[in-house]
Image (cartoon, rainbow over the protein chains, first blue to last red):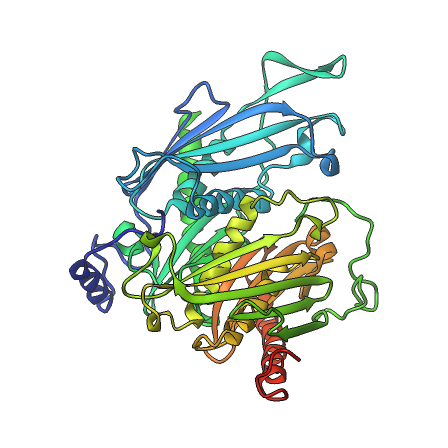
Length: 272
Length: 247
């Protein structure tokens, strides 16, 4: 349901007409994302948490940290998993039940952005090699859906992991035991930030809302890191992009991502 | 990317890769169109050590009915790996990875197929990975385009798939499994050479914006090479045997 909502023809025509003058229905310029607000630490029971609101799209991300048995082939690394789900309160078309392919894609794109950026140094999260490692799980719950869930989940996840506190563990009789009230800082190396753009005709729009999303020909989500490198990418929608459009999208994602990263940093500072 | 440390030398001092290829060389690709009797169209593709069978059914009635669209036909894709296709047995149930790949391949094929000509119908594309060795989504997409053409479904262009990537700090074409696991980036591309449109694009791994552009450029070059093999597969079937697919 993240990609299919119906929109009346009049509104669609209006959106496309406005684009010819470089305008959008909500008054933004083409490369301007909606206003982003981030609150950190909204769920004290979670080891890290953030509520991100991008226009009228909102998600709550919570980080849980717990010791895990590592995968056999990665015994020297901690574990990381990010998920996303759309709660039925988020939109009239959202339903409970097994995830649709759209939601599977959302969760996997969110995970990929964090994982491929190497935001967390997983080698620092080992308690005992091949026996016990620290698992970091970030789950996104979409509470309000007005388009572009990819970005809002990316921002909430990055903010939540960036601000999480990892409990200290010690190994006793081959089992990890939590040391009460002692924490380590998460080994953060970079802040990955995704920027989703859609193409309507020849126009590229940053951070589409639900109405614009319903008009898209093709979309692309580009995640960049603090150094301005591209770390993950996902094309979607029933049409393609030219080479020129794709290089332009990469430039936009780096520029917009830099601004978003500052908002996440400011929110982290404000919560301290 | 896979995060696993291996001792494999991905690129030697002469610029030769672990499987003997040069940096800008694809693996050997061979495609045969029309390999299944029952399917309306089919293709078998070997992309290096990847072996993939694709069958296309349709346009045909849509079940369940509510999925049909009165304005246009729809494509449904299933990318599936057989349990014996990889080192450790894969659970035959569709994984989240397979669901995602099915979706991106569907969206990569849609721009190529003239679906408006078949309202209320579905074209089903089934891709079975019999053996996997990195780059299966590109190989499956490549085979699926040929199978769709073999089914006689009107198309604007074929979609050719090939990945670019980065391993041992070098931009390489057509990432194999070893390079995917131990390399630095993998950028699978689906491209329609005649329309100059990229219809599948994903990335895992870190690239600077210059590296990203270079990957796109050599990836598109790779797709163009694959495109020639796709066309040849269709010519081999339809021009040398006069359309008799029981040869």
